[in-house]
Length: 307
Image (cartoon, rainbow, N blue to C red; front, side):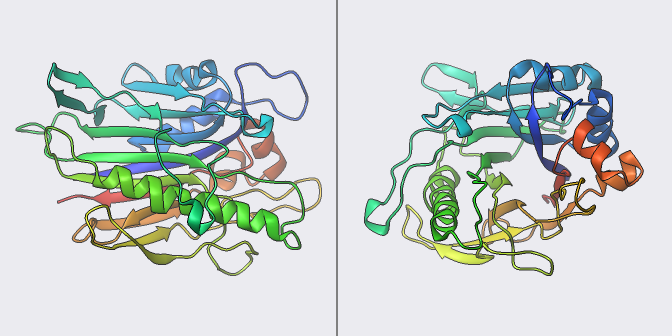
């Protein structure tokens, strides 16, 4: 069974625009999600729930959405996340508890412990955690997909010369991968259903590929497990996915948008990660138009075939 998971930084996405920089084309955003045949899309930079709801409404009654905003003491970090999913394909999982079955609603993940001894510091913006299971399968569901929607902090300073920015972004990725991913992927609930956990979003870190620059993300590494066995973690999606400043030059820039997963847990599955050529497909190659009407990122995709 194949499922297509999207990640999409929506760039200052709010329900009401008051300047000339942004005039979101909601029909176009919904058309991208529909045409690309996503089963679920994790969004970043969604500043209020109404914005995500307006997209969901254009997709129709087969779609659902959830939104949340992590608490933050940093104004720059004060933005929300959203999930939009196709109800015919996926549904939030129902967990068995001592009080019966309850629906696991997407939530901001706040309960984690940092390793101060290794230099970790708390995230400026905690991730948005969701658990989905297939809908409509003969005989019922037999696995779940856990998504950790993250947006690593960005600074407008010159990261090529500012070591502090590099350290901040890499620290946030370490906390997400070594602490939060490990805890969520190891978690067992009452139904003990096999779980496939994916960390996804805008990491503001590049995989080292042509036309990219530092700070770079370590592509494959090992992290400890709560059960004593190491996890081999891999990050994929190497295509350029951000838009350069259209006033200066056109084209794509960084490959900041990624998916991270445990190689051992996903052994035996088929995985394909790529980006959508959204500027060309939906705006005729007009980068300035795309940035104004859609985003300064294109959506990225992870297609997984779970046998």
